[in-house]
Image 1: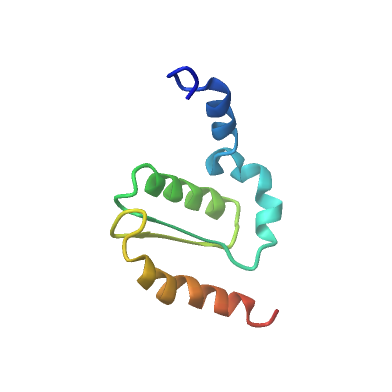
Image 2: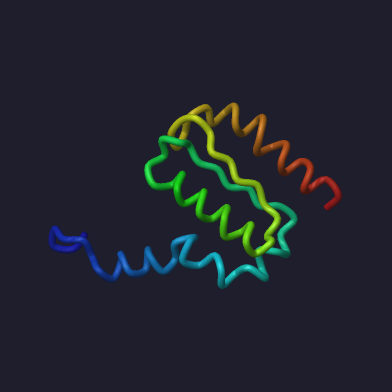
Length: 97
């Protein structure tokens, strides 16, 4: 905010660096990753829809990834997701490094 109003410069930079705005320009780099996973809660306002769109973009370009929508908001069952999803994901991907 600037003088009580949204700052147009900040909004422009935010939009230019949004995952959906940047995804296609980084496809070659994204294809080099050993693993990409994205998730969002179904009550995570705006973010769940972005994850669905990003999933489609990555799939359309053949980028290996996993996308998940779970029941909840931004932090629902985070301890369970870390232990059952995140740590096993990295354990498999980083095992031979």
